[in-house]
Image (cartoon, rainbow, N blue to C red; front, side):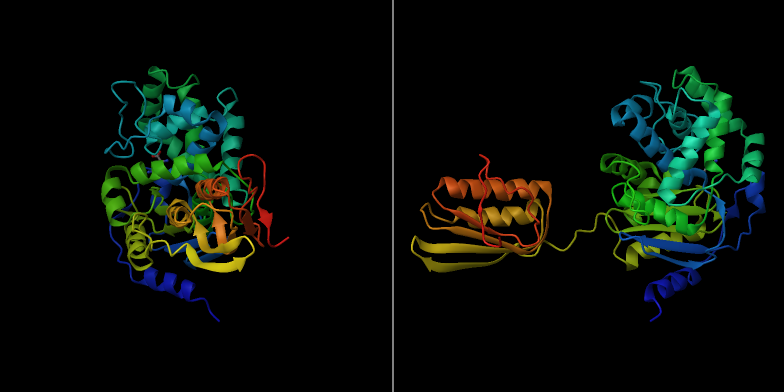
Amino acid sequence: MRSPIEDYLQEVLAGTEDGGEVASYIPELAQADPERLAAALCTADGTVYAAGDTAARFSIQSMSKPFAYALALEEHGIDRVLQKVGVEPSGDSFNSASLDPSDQRPDNPMINIGAIATHALILPEGSRDERDERVRLGLSAFAGRELAVEEAVYASEIETAFRNLSLAYLVRSADGFGQDPHEIVEGYTRQCALSVDVRDLAVMAMTLAAGGVNPVTTKRVVSAEVAQQVLSVMTMCGMYDAAGDWMTHVGIPAKSGVSGGVIGGLPGQVGLSVFSPRLDRVGHSVRGVQVFERFSREMGMHLLTSPPLSVDAVRSITRTETDRGQQRSFALQGPLRFSSAEQVLRQFERVTPGDFPVALDLSRVTSFDPVARRMVLEGLRRLREDGHPILLADPKGVLPEPDLGDGSLPERLDA
Ligand code: GLN
C-alpha cells in the first residue's frame, strides 16, 4: 500500500499559494530557487514521511537557535543560562537591538541578540574552532547525520553581518560574554550556515518533542528537562513578533529561518518541517506558514486542544467470596496519570476497613507516570493500613517497585 500520509503531505503542499520575497540581506540566500517546496513529518518511533523537493539542501539559519540553546542548557544547566539570556517574548523583530533595561540580558534565545549570547555560552573557554565543532556535532546528533557548513552561505553572510556584529558588541558591552565579539559572530554565522534538508529538520524537531532522544538513532541528545525548556521558549518566542498570532492560530511550538524553513515539534507526537524560500514581512516562509496552518487544523495538532477526557481508568470492580470475606478486585486500564489515578483513589475510598483482600489487576494498563505511581501506591498502602491484604497482578511490569511504604510488597497474583 502507498502511504496515505505522504499523499496527504503532497496534497497540502500543492494547495499552498506562494507570495512574499526571498531573503536578500544575505546575498547567497537571494540565489535560492524560490519555487522549491518540501515538507517532512517524523513520528515518535522515528518514521519519516516526506514530500516535494525532499533532496533540496538549504542553510538552517535561525532554526539552529533552539538546538544551540539546548546545547548551552545541557552544558551549564537552566539556571546559569537564564542569568545570561531571558525567556520573555520580545514582540520585536528577529534582529532587534534590545537588552532588558533592568538586567541587560537579551530577552530570549530565539532572536539574534539572544542567539549570539547563547552561542558564546557553548564551550566558553574553548577556541572558536572548538566551539564551532561542538555546535556542528551537537546539531548533527539532533539530526542523526553529520551536518556540514555551507561555506558559500557562511562567506556571504559574514561579509554583510554588520547588524549581528553590532548586536554582539552590545551584549559584550553589557558583560554578556567575555570572548571577542567578532569570533562569536563568526561562530554564530557558521552555526546558521549548517546545511540541512527537510528530513533532517523533522528528525531534529522530533528529538525535542520526544524529550531529547533522537527517535531515529535512539540516542539521548539532551535531557528531558532541557527539551521541555527549549520547546517552551519556542512556544513563546520562536515566531518572533508573530508569536502570539502563531500560538493561537497554529499552536505548535515552532521556529522559522530566513532560508525559508519552518520547524515545529508537538510533544510526544510529531516533528514537522517545511521548506519554501519566499518570506512574509516578519521573515517566515509564506507557504511554510500555510502548511503549518493546515496541519494544525486538519490533523488536530494545536497544543492546547483539550485531549479526549481520560477513559474510565477503573474498568471493573468485582467481588469474589474468600474465607476472609468478599475480596474486592479492581481491574484498571489505559495510561495512568494524575487524572486517571484520581479515579482509582476515589474507588479505593469506598472500600470499608476489614481484613478481606483487595486485588489490583494491571494487565490492561499501558503505563504509569511517576505521579500516578505514587498515588496508586499510597492508596494501596492506606488500604493495607485499614487491614486488607493487597494482591497484585502486573504481568507486563508497568508498576515498577510496588513498595507499600515500609519495604513490604503486595502479594503477586502473576508470579
Ligand atoms: N543568520 C541569520 C541572521 O542572523 C538568521 C536569521 C533568521 O533566520 N531569522 O540574520
